[in-house]
Amino acid sequence: MNNSHVEEEVGKLKEEIQRLGQQQPDGSYKVKFGVLFNDDRCANIFEALVGTLRAAKKRKFVTYDGEMLLQGVHDNAEIILLPPAVAAA
Image (cartoon, one colour):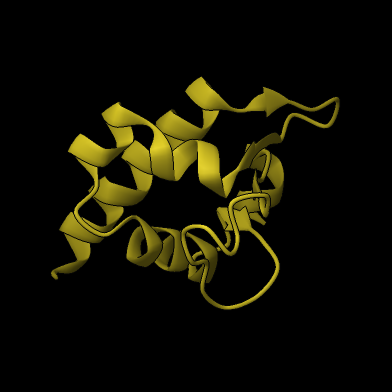
């Protein structure tokens, strides 16, 4: 996967987390992995949601516990979209 495609996927992921998640007082958004994974719109957008999440975590746009999230096992794992100031730092 080329870098511009990864950046595009991460951008879409940020939009979907904002759509499905709850905004926190610090400007971040929280969403459970199961909510993202089971959402029809996300299923149509992301070929590999877990891979996109890992790319976003590597770029410090999101944070979550562990290296890889698995459907079913980690449905209640919280994914946090960091506020722009933190992500830019």
